[in-house]
Length: 426
Ligand code: CTP
Image 1 (cartoon, rainbow, N blue to C red):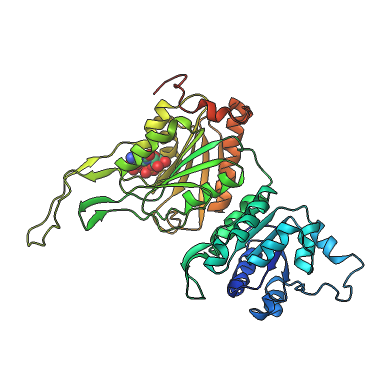
Image 2: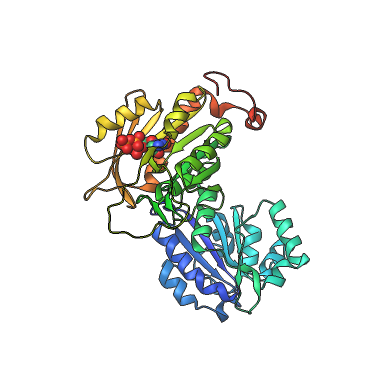
């Protein structure tokens, strides 16, 4: 996440919910990712959290009262409203949603919400019945129709003892939604991006499998970057623990064969395919139906090869599609990566060292090299997976623009859906 919000001006509005304490963690994560955060607390929020906590975390004065002595010659609520690049209200109570929907300006936060032209993101948190109430739902619809954005609350047991939707969304989901709204590059706005991610589990019997160490972190970073740049994103994910961005359609699979089927079903409407999954090269030929019993003799499992998903896509892709792979190597990194780029007929490949201290699997930072089919190589030493995803999508966007894929009018993607392949057809 580091740098994702570098130097961006965010107003963090905190309202009177039991979830207000979670806004401290949110503020801290925003600061960690480089944002400049102005905390604004309602009087009711102060019943749950202290302004001092937010001041310590953000290094800025927490604004509460409307008519405090002027701290600068500017009219503060107008100046903050104009400077803000994002208004993030988390947690947002039924009360602030009602006030925002009806233009009521009776405290600092609601007044400033009227004065800003920045995108507004609400993360509601309240009792499930209050959330489901037609008044709240109508207010949410009104705000959505006006262009406000929402991170849906989660279902669960609420502080009031009721179970249902109303719990503040996870900090990660709020940060993802904020990152999408703040991205300046929207060069993939007409594109569909299909990503494979994570490991495969190949069953040995009903309780055992062959797997690998892939965390799914790279797939997550790629999905978030594609969403930030305006793409419609589908992730076909093996059993990874990392949470994918809420804005991406997620298809869960276990085995390489299931992943292959899921790719084949969606590849025609994709403009970009990224094979970030650590696909299992082999599967057990005959997994046992019942649990295998322990014995004294050695056990031999016969493994058969799985299909090469990236090679299948590379061989069948249309000229307007871009296909990208990853090469995980323990030795001769660039040579092996070049061979995979050529053999799988990809447009780009990311070469990563695996094994030893520089292992990319599961790490947050990697030594990567971007190799293009044109022969160009870009070295990216010690980059975060987020920065790698950004650099990769810069290359992909340039290829799409050169092929005219991103110049199509909005709506053309929809018309192309289901149409026959032009060349090299499937
Ligand atoms: N890949 C794939 N299907 C497979 C194997 C790999 O789609 N059955 C994709 C990976 O997602 C990656 C690229 O091909 O984008 C290279 O994967 P990698 O594991 O580095 O190489 P392999 O082709 O499996 O070759 P090897 O294991 O011999 O290095």
